[in-house]
Length: 106
Figure 1 (spheres, rainbow, N blue to C red):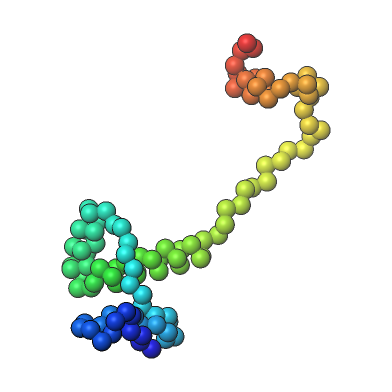
Figure 2: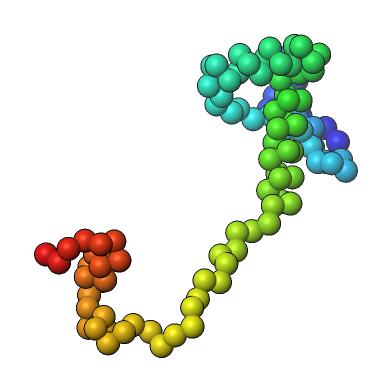
């Protein structure tokens, strides 16, 4: 389905495609750095495709990768034991950290 946007009596009318099974086409503006855009234009020309189709392919690829990526899961690294030794139970984090990294007492 196509809908007229703005004053459709004038020339040329602005059209926006909406609906359809795969959704409509809506124009948008994106900021792309000049060097990247130049490279995209070269690749598009060498492949005989439009910049738009390359942008769409890239977006689809990123979305597919994201959808198929497994979420990060932190491995269980717990150790058996009963907590800190008596000598460390009253120690503050600074003292424990310094001892862990071999820093001499201040």
